[in-house]
Image (tube, one colour):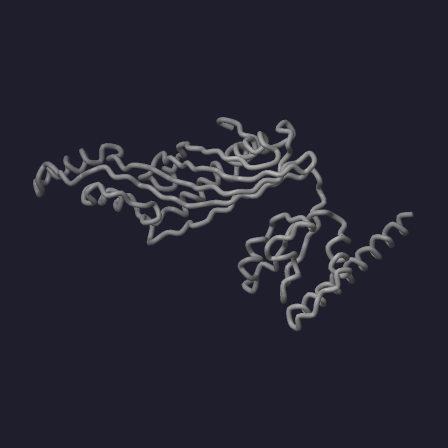
Length: 291
């Protein structure tokens, strides 16, 4: 019986592979010559799969087109193709579909966008210099060259932690198993070890998403608008220390009227895609204050 089962499985895989190959050839003919695709061939290519969903996989090299790189690692349904089409459908596509077999498997992916720095990272001396000579002008974190480092740390503290931001989003989505939802968050995060001059930095955002029930699971996706705010306010009494040294050498006046606190701000966006248990008690994605 085992041998027969293996034989059946092999035969099925060969058949599916043959049908997929036939569809690819038909698709190439359509792209090159405008030849209509036989509907029976397309149906066989999209219906005869061992699972209803798959994970998009790329070759992960420099030849992967950006739109397909964006799909890498994401889960799609065979009956709901992404805008790019399924793996292998686009002409010359070398991507492949890995069967998504675990019915109860959860995942939650938050992807950051618009995170780019505009120069070399500021050190403590640069932040202090702007405090004394910047006239209180607000600066963006990306202008200081530290945005990416702070966002990476934020991921570790909140965006990649199931009981933090993903858990909050999942809990909100559970309130409306089919439809749309929105929420917001705003909390301080310690950044002193990343950029000493920042200390505790407030990061918040507004969340907009859609959710669809899939049996005992829910599938959600959406967008997050992130914003960061901080203020450099003479940490550790540095102004007094500078004035003490100035008085000691007597080289400058004892007052520095140009020294003013200044705001540090920035914005970026993110997208999320997830599949989690509808039953909160069965899910690892659930918000836990302080967890």
